Image 1 (cartoon, one colour):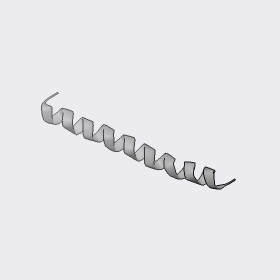
Image 2: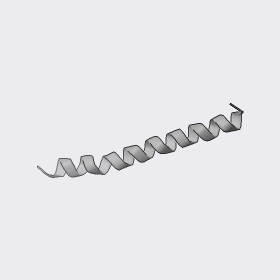
Image 3: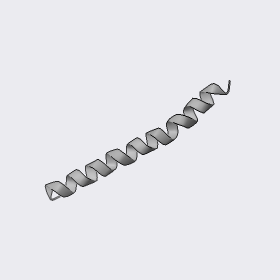
Length: 35
């Protein structure tokens, strides 16, 4: 039962990267709107 652990360990960095990208896009969008 090692495969589920590998899948979870593989999804964690991807989810973290997705959150960083989403926050970065919102930050840029806020600056463009003058907020």
